Structures are given as C-alpha cells and as structure tokens.
Length: 465
Image 1 (cartoon, rainbow, N blue to C red):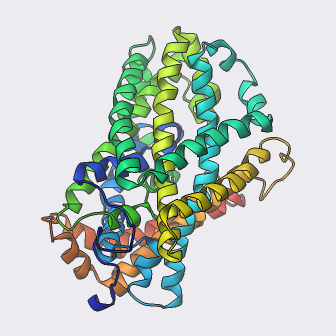
Image 2: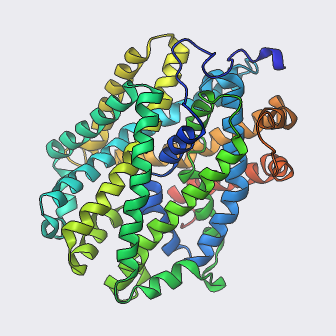
Image 3: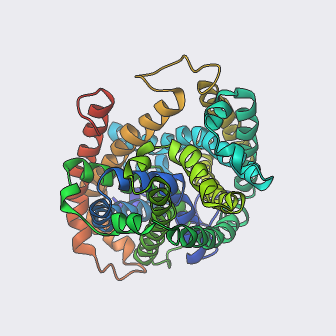
C-alpha cells in the first residue's frame, strides 16, 4: 500500500505548496487554529453548566487520550501524503467511502469559516467600541441584539474581518499564516494572563475559582461526559481538515508526538485561562450564581461587558479582553481559510492567489447569509435555528464526528496502525503508542458515535443537553 501514496513530503509535493520554517512555527500555527472562540467563551460556559471541576477533569482525560490519538492520526497522514484531506484519503485508494471521508473533512472548514468570520466581525466591532471608550453603551441592555439585527453595520464589520483573513492567507504559509501566528499567539497569552489576574483578584471571585478547579461528584451526569467530549473535539481542530493540511507542510524531521503534546499543553492552558478570566468575574458580579454563566454564546457579548463595566476600568479591561479574543478569532479563521485554499489548490491545480480569491468570494456570499439571518432574514428558521446556528450545528455536531469516524476507519482498516507508527517514529519516540492503538480502534469511535447521536437527539428534543 505504501506505493500508492503519491503526495510526497512537504516542500516536495504539489507545485506551489507551502511549508513551515520549523517546529515552532508549526506548533504556533496549529495552536492558533485550536485556540479560538471555542476556548474563550465555549469552555467557560460549558464548564459552568456541566459541573465545574468535574467537567474540567473529564475534559483533560479525554483530551489526553481521544484528542491525542486524532491529532496524531491526521497530522501523520497529512505528512505521509503531502496532501490536504481529499488528496490524503485518495492516496490510499478510490473506494467510495474514502472519497467521502476526504471530502467531508475538506468541506467542513469551507462551511465553518464564513459564519466564523461573522462572529469575528462582532468581536472587531466590540474591540473598536472599547478602544474609543464606549464601555457603558456596550454594557447596556439590548445593545448586542440591536447591533446584529442591523444587517448593514454587521455586514461592514464582517467584510473587514474577512478581508484581514484573506490578506494573511494570500501572503502564503511561511510569510502569512506562520508569521501572524508567531506574533499573535504569544500576545494572546500575555493578554489572557492579564485579564485572568484582574478577574481572580476581584472581591467574591474565590467561589468561581473553587467551582472551576475542585471536582464535585454531585455535579456529575452523563451529559457532563458528552459536553466534555464535544468541547475537546471542538477546541483541538480535529476533523476540520486543518491537521491534515498543516501536517502536509511538515518536514520528516519534525517530532510529531512532541508537537502534539505541546499543542495539548497550549490548548489546555488557554482554556484554563479563559475559565479564570470569565468564571470568577461572573461569580463576583452575580454574587455566586453559576446560572449567569450558562448564557451560551451571548456570554461574551452581553454578560461579560456588563461584568467589566461593573468592576470599573471597563474600557481598559474590556479593550484588552476583546483584543485577545480578536487574536484568537483571527488565527482560527486563518487556519480554516488556509485549509480550504489548500484543498482547492490541490484539487484544481490553480495557483494560490486564484484559490484565495475564489475562497474569499465564497466566504463573502455564505457569510452574508448568516449576517442577514440575524437581521432582515431573521424570519428564516431551519430546525428552529437561525442560519448561523444551523451551519454551526451542521458542521460541529454532525459533519465533524462523521469526518473523525472516517479518519479512524482509514487508520485502522486501510493505512494500518503500524504504518502510522512508522511515520511517527521517523522523528519521534512514540512513547504513547499502546494508548494510541487502543484509543483509535476502540475509544475514539465509541466517543464519536455518542457525540453524533446525542447532538442529533438534542436538536430534535429527544434529550436535553
């Protein structure tokens, strides 16, 4: 089967394909992809909703097992073939399910990045307002609802965000994606530490810290496990085609296992910092009521501005917070567009610039539908969801578990775990090989089926999550 792999190594593969300058560039680029809006607002509200410390414990266990195995698999196959998802799957055969597996991995980022940029536009708008000193207005009731229902204003900020992402990706892998990640990720960490330190030192914040870090079995339920699996899956860029694509840019002397461990550490650190930024602050603001943290997506745009304004220095802290969120949103959106451009480039043979322009136009068209869905098209409902919420459900709750299942089948039934181990061991000790073999064959498929079925059952009202 080895002879069927035609992609080649990064730098030696398809014409015009980029590559990272080294291991650190790759780690920061992948971390930039993984550390996004999911870490900043999704982790804190899920942790609050599903048990605090017990949720955190389960999340860490799943990330070090399930997440580890999927990251290694996608990265190793990407480097092995030198291709983005479609080419990577096709390199091992032309069976129908393999073509489907490649394309479902490839299409996911194409569908996510347009609506993700809509949210990025919201972040840009809030950052601008904080910078000009409008923290009081941002904390007012109905400000957020009024903004997103104004399709013209929301469209302008969406366009600006998309254009910024386009400029970075058009600059290439080394001089665009990697360079921006190297600058933004360290700054993101510094800003996160600042906001977290401010939050945990507020009067009444100790209750939030205790709730986040001390596991309480009384808060455990089966939905704690399901939610932790979903968050781990969401936050590590698994099944988005990103790791296949970034893996294809790696040289053979890069230690994949070590970079995976660094990614796990970086992603967890940011998730914990996000928890420390938000949970203690909201606890202090609400007098110890964890219910205020369960607001979901509105937490970042409605609750947090009120919290910062109540603490004083609303413009300063809010500006720093949304600058950090802007960095997280940009790096994730860049990775999603880069993955999409790589697929188009591999499958059409077009130059990078042409592929960037095609993806830019597609993002504008599909993203505008999501913008209008919050305003003049708000009457449109799909399964009871707005256009943006529907694309989020379709990609994250349905397509991503299916894509990851295809990866597990590819590894176990086609490529072989021994072949994956050979690829990893070309520059890694592969100390967790036994764990990897068990997870990718048994644990991961079971977890993915649970995520898929529970998500679908929830949207149809059969279970409550």
